[in-house]
Length: 615
Image (cartoon, rainbow, N blue to C red; front, side):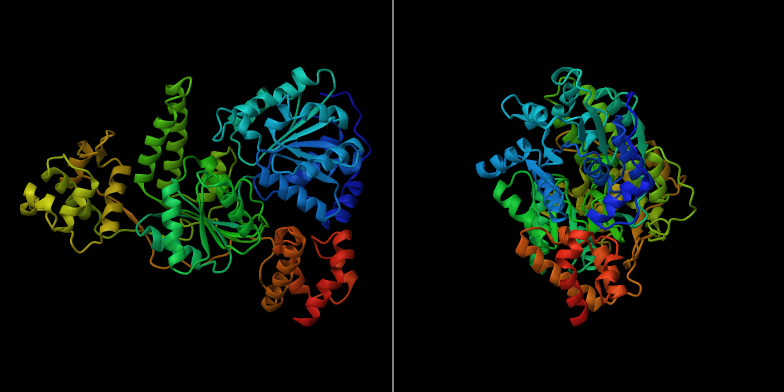
């Protein structure tokens, strides 16, 4: 622990800066504790789920102690958005990355030399590279504090390990020895094991460890059996028409196919993945941030660098790889504290795809067996979340080591009773298993489904499978629902599937017990119609003049376009909702609304009041 006296910074000093700069009257208890740890020049680990306001934890201290802080951040778009948002409120900040022009880069260097910055955002690669000038910059700025964002990337036990993050320990051990540099690690997703690994890998010195609540009560979680994927995705988007939605897929091909389908149905949608040209990726990110694009269909490459606060829906068109990925990706919904929906369409076929991808990606690892074992354990936890009919908020909280005591969250498919048991599930299971037996346990899912459907294919006729007793036995069941049933049986262990290049279905001991009627099978299906429901949100639409709210959004979008920034950088939806409810008529009333600091009040106050008057 550092032997430095904590500066005399009481709650009044901290809140004064927060109110003047960002327009907030209060801080969450964890935010204040993290800020105090920074002011006391003490190492810290802050685990604060997305939407918890972790950025303020490293943005406030430099304004109070008048010393610059360097923030290590992994993505250019994330750094750019943060720097832009800070400049809007008059905060002296800059981002140093490869996307800058030589003139812009020189301006940042000039600001550093003249001690004008209080926050510098930089990537770990640039900070640690010998040619990037990162370490020289730290010395020029007389840095004593470094904040490391997305710190879970440092842990090999986590879901997004990045080797370059491991080298950040060098900042203290080798590069700045004896300089008394304080490290603050921030992350939104870390199990207790990952938390311990972050502390060890960064050599944090008796750190203040602050772990917030992982539960996001404003999010409605729905994990539904995948039956008609495109239709189910469209239904979710439709519940949030003209609002921001992110749809996640496993592969690049999936993103392009689904985005094309959505666009053909009239949605403002586009695909996004790492294989695209960088110009196209940037164009789609900008369109989504600027609210000219409603839906992005993406691989996990999208979202980490998106700071848009009013994403109202996140859809996983397939099961994600880990619970950490799921928590991080769903965490991009409702960051403004308002209600948002998170839908996952689950199929055992997704888990099978992930197993194959894990094995393929581990081929070049130093220890492939250890990598496969670690990633398979995480995948099994993800499957368990999908298959267990227990409150989703409870399962997620307990996975991250926190107790959840509410008997009913009122904001997930289980507690809302939105998934129902399938009628005649045991009979349907017997029909499927009997067909597997009749075709000699030598064919895959597609062929078995075709036989049960009574498909008139050349292959079925050549094999004589059209004369089997199970041929056409389930012709009244749609192909996609029937395929979903087969994968449910695989998932529940009533049916096996080989892992070779041409996977075939095999019966096991449980299969025979089902066919003999000794085991009752329970299969699930989503209810026909799901409603848009509000989770517990900080600012509801109750009492809000919706016409005024839309008028404020239109004004905000126009102003953002003039300034070349995303609309949420001007004002969050939460602030606009309060304005549309309170309908202020003079500046003092406007000053009392959360999210309007002194600079915004001076620059934009009269324009806001004019929108209110004219709406």
